[in-house]
Length: 354
Image (cartoon, rainbow, N blue to C red; front, side, top):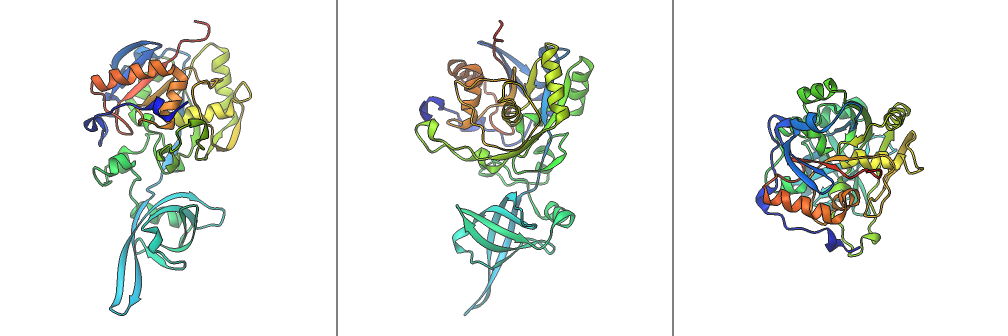
């Protein structure tokens, strides 16, 4: 399959730069096979039923975007230069993180970057285009300093339109966020608030929590013409024994498993590659494209994705390429808001027994 098979035209004005308020007031496109309905997220109570199980990613986004200064002594005196860093992953060596750094080529090994009065890092080396930074703090001290100095790592298509601000620390975090480690939000989950969760519980919908730390690789463009040549960025995830057991019990009882977000879907399908879900922990680079066999997910709640992205390939695998083209054409015509802070969709493919 060619990358161009997953392209579409998106008017710039449909890219959302702020979320709907309240969260559950966002619009929701519901696709039952080829049939499309226009609704709102709070209408999920009309589309879900008792015995359904939503699978929720409980990762917590860290304020991974840092702005600092490096200093050098020159013939003209001591000069400072601005350095921007987006943290990616902690390394086995305590205090060391991989990061995207700008301008990377102007840094020298051993130079210190000062991010705040409390937080600073030494630039150690470059590997595969990533910088490795050794921070002066670890554990709780690091977390406290990072929370004070860092900004939310908004996706490039939002960051190009406005800088992150204090409101993003709330907006770009799910209400059930628990396990710190993501540098991007599981954005479909941003549509849920406490009243909606309570309303869903009241009708008998159940919830299972899993963890997938979303990495910056989720925003990396696909650069190959033949999608079979693309290599996914690995992300750490965990499906606990309890989570796997809950999903198995729901399937046995005839309920639907509906991951909220592509991150939750990719994780449970990784844990279900043996045919049924089992406890799992590790790095997943699962790449879901048309022809993929879904062993766990029966439907998906997700946002609207970038053209030519791996996530467009994923939803095409779930619903079929022609159906996804129709869904996205409908969304553009009806001015749904796109991407991380945009509106949502509930994608329900026909059951195999239907």
